[in-house]
Length: 198
Image (cartoon, rainbow, N blue to C red; front, side, top):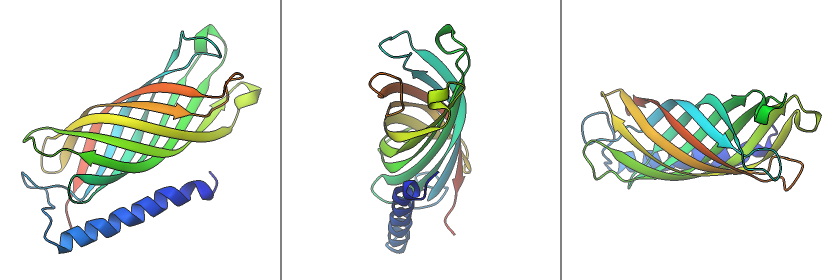
């Protein structure tokens, strides 16, 4: 991964930490008790992706994998998210092609916290993808990637939450020997580890 691809996530993380610290000083309700917001959440997710088939086709294929997310919560429902996910598929579209895709993304999230037991949210993430394949043209390729997603989570215990479901549209510029654009659907679910203020 090249250094310039880390600049945006690092800047967003710095801004979020600053906002979180300022909010805490202003008396924001951070904590693990009912009605409070954990300032830091780390997620571990199971991921299913429905991806484009080879060029000019729409049979599509599926990738399965996992990922992790780091969420830094500030006030007014605003958070900064860093998300890394890896998915894999064998014998793509009945060929001998095997594909592994690594996505590394970061960006803002808005959570609507008016409900007692559920928290719906929307996010927009940006970053890149790395594709590894046994095809010579895409053995190790990096490309710009954008993600728009909706999800809903809940709190199970003081320390544990659950991403019930998250659905994302993922646009990437990975090569496909045609227009070099990918439009994929990602669905995820997973456990959230909640951390209290220090």
